[in-house]
Amino acid sequence: MSRGLTRRRASDIGLAVLAAGLAVAFSGALATWRITAQGDRDEQRPADAIVVLGAAQYDGRPSPVFQARLDHAVELWHKGLARWFIVTGGKLPGDRTTEAATARAYAIDHGVPAEVIFGEDSARNTLTSMRLVAALMHDRGLRSAVFVSDPTHMLRVLRLADDLDIDAYGSPTRTSPVQNDPQLVAQAVIHELGALAVYFATGGELSPSVPEGSGQIR
Image (cartoon, rainbow, N blue to C red; front, side, top):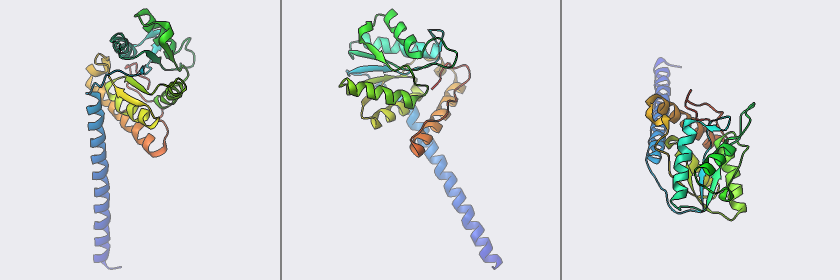
């Protein structure tokens, strides 16, 4: 093989690597923009249910992240946007209660009637929660829901809801402590990028990896 041909092939490989790198960078930038844009959007409107995504709880006490989600979901329910209030989330080994039970108790303490609250109490990740919520909603003939979580979480939640045949709208909390810390926001965005990539590639869920100290476990 001539030196000229070798150089041309090396150049072609270099250009292919550069093009692939630029494509990955562009895709990452676009996904980051979409995560941010969806998190900035509040789509609250009348629906069949309000769904609050779980986060860490400490022996029945919601973490600051979870409380921010619950406060917003309860506020939406008191506005009369939906009849049903759906809670989600299981527990870690050694926990005495679940995220769903914690959310239920908190909502009742803040004026949501027990009889309108239902949900799933076994999931440990967003994908499983969403699948279980979809099954519960479909069994009850419910089609639409306003989903409440942190801003960085909303794009993935709504994509999953759409794939599960739910008419979904996002209403992120604005009081999460994560939003006050740029480093935690950046870590949450990176986690969402990874989770979305895994979901699109395999249909599965990224192993839990969350900002230290954030109280977010999704």
